[in-house]
Amino acid sequence: MKAAQFRDYGGPEVIEINEIPQPTPAQDQVLIEVYAATINPFDYKVRRGYMKDSMPLKLPLTIGGNFSGIVVGAESEVTKFKVGDKVFGQSYAFGGGSGAIAEYAVASVENIAIKPKNISYIEAGSLPLVGASAIQALEQHINLKDGQKILIHGGAGGIGSIAIQLAKYLGAYIVTTVSGEEAEFVKSLGADEVIDYQKEKFEENPPAGGFDAVFDTVGGDTLDRSFKVLKKGGVLVSMLGEPSKELALKYEVAVFGQNTQTNSKNLSRLKELVEQGVIKPQIDRVFPLDQTREAFEYVETGHPRGKVVISIKE
Ligand SMILES: NC(=O)c1ccc[n+]([C@@H]2O[C@H](COP(=O)([O-])OP(=O)(O)OC[C@H]3O[C@@H](n4cnc5c(N)ncnc54)[C@H](OP(=O)(O)O)[C@@H]3O)[C@@H](O)[C@H]2O)c1
Image 1: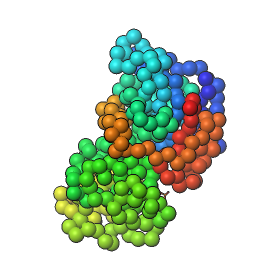
Image 2: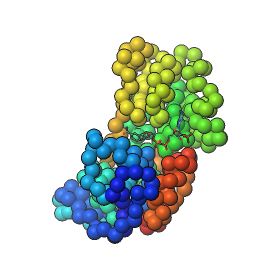
Image 3: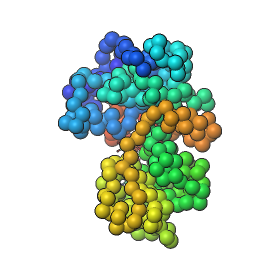
Image 4: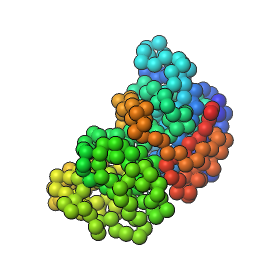
């Protein structure tokens, strides 16, 4: 089968399309014929070698983690899924899976769910990590309620564009930071106010009393400055590391450095929200498997709006 792999750490140029044997499912796994897979920032951070000390990998490695497809094989112990099920989920090669940007992948039954019925494989393949991230942050950590005010950093990105839709459904007033040309896009998703992060400082005009919550998908300086705009008792969730405990004490807010669980519970909730029409996948561009390198180049330089997807069998 064909798989997009890298054998040396580096830029998109290290990506090659290789002919390799089909993976074999272990006890709690299924074999999936992959229809579509997406690119997440995590995928190019791994390829660049950012995690090579903390997470040594056996190379060559099949790149990518999120997919949609059809179950074509399962060990006899697997009862939750059967051959023919249309699924979406996660298969990281270093997390017990085999990697998603390939014609076939194996995934644990804990990391897949039945795909939403009302969307295509390309749309479903774009969603697992970004959808689970928004659900875990807004529904589980923040417990966002009707009438609350939330600031979402990076609203035009993969996670931000889903988080805005979910926050709208939960009844929140949404302010989001994006670069200027994305203002109309995020308003169409449900943002009430848009701040151009290249022109304005978001902390200069917070709402009276402060925000109930900040969801940070940017990190660094943006994360540290976010404490200033929260009200006492507010919640700050960051996708990029642990927020400062000292600042949390000083500003009297709760903080979470989120590690997203792309598990069957979050994926099933995602399916429900997509089928209710609450969450609509945001696809920027689709590339064929043979152009995975070009797709990564585009993601890493092109400032995509939403997700870039590799179409494998659709
Ligand atoms: N901890 C976890 O479990 C976990 C899980 C998933 C993702 N993550 C991390 O979360 C981050 C976001 O993921 P993603 O998939 O949403 O990435 P993404 O699609 O690249 O989106 C990031 C967005 O942030 C915008 N941005 C950049 N600098 C900004 C700033 N100073 N203020 C406001 N917006 C800014 C970017 O816009 P421009 O186009 O203007 O640059 C882009 O739209 C990534 O770093 C990823 O690795 C962590």
